[in-house]
Each structure stands twice: as structure tokens, then as C-alpha cells.
Image (cartoon, rainbow, N blue to C red):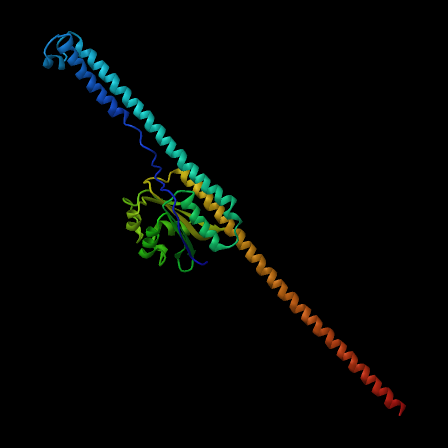
Length: 315
């Protein structure tokens, strides 16, 4: 399989939605402002005591309790609203992330699975992982079971510099330096690295990935029937990105790719068998033609011999 490299310009996978105002901080500031305002009203409007006394809510009986209740209501309401907003943003990010992964899987299912050329097939998958799936980096490795090596045959990145530096760090020379990818290529289950920064990732290009914002990774096995043939590896900008839902969706995409590889192999075997059959038919036709020619020549010689015998008998 001929290697391909692709640079793309997809947005990052950090799902960095616009940050809303901090309601909790605003409500705390409002509570403080209310306390000061109430103190000034008591000191200068109602003249219930000096400002030092009203600030401590000691000018009237029950003043401290009332202010504390109002302040706690303001702060508590702000905290609750902030909590709801953060939950909503988290849900929106999750939905956005899953939608992108589903779009990636749908693209693989509807478009890539129709390809019959391995080079363009892997090229399109890596581009789709970055452009549609929103990953920072993606590559496909071909596994050699005999040599126990993994060769990167297609790569894609959202950044040309990242692509060049990762390949220079050794991805193209020996992709087996990534234990996570090698484990996936040799097995039947996805493998993940939830944090490139904290996990014991021995890949030679780990630091380069971190410098370009890649913080987590996952590898998904590719196989033809029961034979392991490689791995699809993707890198996200978010730590802890790969949870059960994300892994299941991407595993489906890898399964579609494996189905396509199986289909290509079946077609290649079929074409090879057809070519072998055509050669055998050609050989049989040549043998038959040679046999017919030989029989005709024998018949001609027999006829000539009979003619000569007939002439000798007459003489």
C-alpha cells in the first residue's frame, strides 16, 4: 500500500463554545453591593446609626438576620443558575462531539466503503477523521504479523507543521513505537490513551503531539475477516475525550473500513482466480488447437501413404 499524507484545515475538537458570563460571580458581587447599599441607606437616609455600625448590621434588631438571608438567596440563586448553565454547555458539547463522530461514521459508510483503491481509501478516511470528525491528527498503520511491525501508510492533520514534525519524529519510520496503536493492530479491541500528558506514552512523537494540542488518543483495529491488518489512530484536543459512546461510534467506523478491506480482498482474490482461469482456458485452447493440427497432419500423411501404396500396386 502506497503511503499518503494529507494536510487539512478542520477546526479543533475542543468544542470550545463561547463562554457565558459567570452568574455566580455576578450574584456574589450583587450580594456585596446590596450589603453596602443597605448599610448606606441606614446610615445616611434613615440615620439609624453611623456607617461603621450599619455595615455590621447592628443598627436595628433583626437587621443582620435579614441581610444574611437575602445575601444567601442571591448567592445561592447565582450558584444554581451557574450550575444549570454549565450542565447545559456540557450537554451541548457532548451532543456536538457525538454529532461530528456520527457524521464521520456516516461518511465512511456512505462514501469510503465504495472505494476499491487502498491508497485513496486510507487517504479519504484520514481526511474525514480531521475534517468531519474534528480530530487534530489521524493516521492508519499497516500491520505486518511476521515482522510484528506497524507502518504508517496514510496521515492527516489540521496543521501542516504538526504533520511534518510528527512524521520527522518517527511516525513514518516506525509506527510500532506507539504501543497503543500496535496493541490495537495486534488485537480485536480498541485501545485508548486518555491523557498523553500523564499516561506512560512511549511514542517518539508524543511531545510533538502535545505541543500541537493533541491531548488524548485512541486506536481501532482493522481486520480482514479474522486476520489483523492494521489500525486507525486518532488524536483529540481534549483530555479524557474517548468515553464509551465515542469509542462505540468510532469502532463502528473502523468496522465499516474493515468491511471495505475485506470486500477489496475478496474482489482481488476473485480477479486473481478469474485470471488464473483465463490462463488455463487459453492453455487448453492452445493444446486443443495443437492436437487438432497434429491429427490433421497425421491424416494427411496417411492419405499420402495410401496413395503411394495404390500406385505401387498398379505398377
